[in-house]
Amino acid sequence: MSTEKIIDVKLDEKSVIRRSPEIEKERTIAIYDLLEENYFSPEGDLTGPYTLHLSIRENRLVFDIHNENDGPLQETTLSVAPFRSIVKDYFTVCDSYYAAIKTSTPSQIEAIDMGRRGLHNEGADLLRDRLEDKGITIDNDTARRLFTLICVLHIRA
Image (tube, rainbow, N blue to C red; front, top):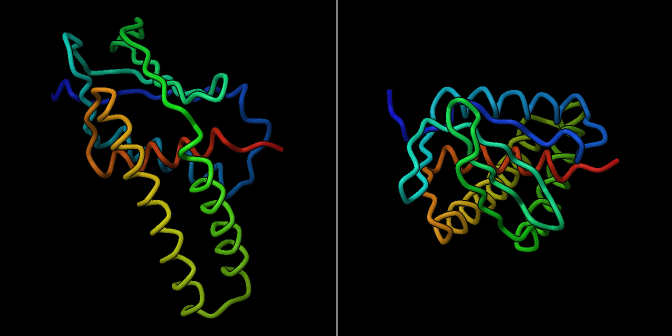
């Protein structure tokens, strides 16, 4: 078993007031996929596997890294400012996508989905780069799944 991985992820549920069924499904899938396969390697003397607590506190994205027994190891924070426009655009395209599923042609749905995936990739790349600047290495799939969870944390009623 690799030690450079996340074995549990906990979202700060206090920061989310409500979720649509579509967003709840995205959250569930992202967590499942993340726990099935990920690469997460903080630099230093930390030894995994890790439990990751994600939250937003004072306009900071908080990655509170714990050991496998949920003992605290390290807290890393990122400003949410660089993510705001991508998350906003991503939600706009997602709303269009969910509406299109009900009434649009397959080619229209595919075009919207391509835009959605492009924004998702952009957000994941930004997250991976920002975490790398803080000494945490993640792979592309892990970045995509964590970006989905960051989006869930941004939902407000």
